[in-house]
Image (cartoon, rainbow, N blue to C red; front, side):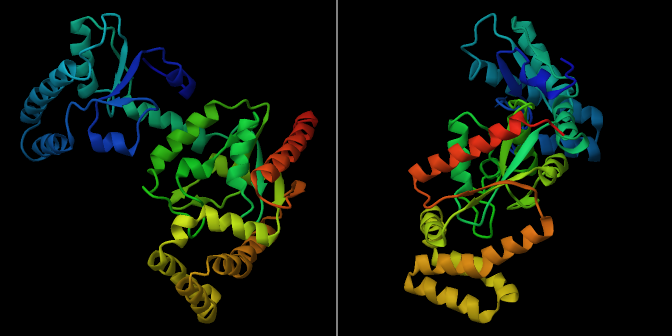
Length: 354
């Protein structure tokens, strides 16, 4: 198989995609939906590579071949034992070379209709970077903005349920997009984030608006790819507003895990001494010690997040197509706000495209 775009890979038509790279390679990134049946594990791959560089390429290939076929046989007797005769697997490795070629040859000898991806994972990665780095995105993006705590992430979920096209960047990045936004389990690799993002983009209709939450160019440690970032900077905004009391209640619940870990919370806030001053950070620490979660959250918004957001808005000067006020942020209020967002998007859809 010689794919020329990501849609061809998405619609490959094979029963199973098999990544025969090592577990570490697979963990960093892989084709969506692929299963990992490594023909060399991490230690074996390192060993063969060392022999190749420091001893003899011939000896490395001989040892590698023995390991590849031994491991391939184990997979055939194990995970692949129940596959029927008409099964069609698509196999790939790093460059579409010996690992995938050997596995596919063995599968074909059994009678399965196996194929490989020309160029392997490198071909897939080139297609992802071509979409996200090299070409402009053909999407009608709309940024969903608002001060911290206006439930923008929850609104994306409500909009999606109502049939609106969305990209949940924080969900893909496994991060809440702020100083205190880390989630259990950590973030994916940059490559895995981009793979998930590319797959989401492939599902979208470019003729219809797509809502994304307003973000900076980084979410946690992950960088938004340049094609997406350029499209976001050019996108109009829908701004959501809510009273600080409602935002406080929302954040106390949404950040319950962070607020429950006093030591971690103090460590996260410590670097802000340089920007917000010792007196304010000392006050935050006092509130942490007293268990005053609402007071801490409200102060963080008034004295840190809101000023930072206002500064960013002055610098960006986004084109705001609608401002929507929410009296509260409970489910009923979010449904109402989502309806107003839909109405604004409908007006956008009927407007001529620039």
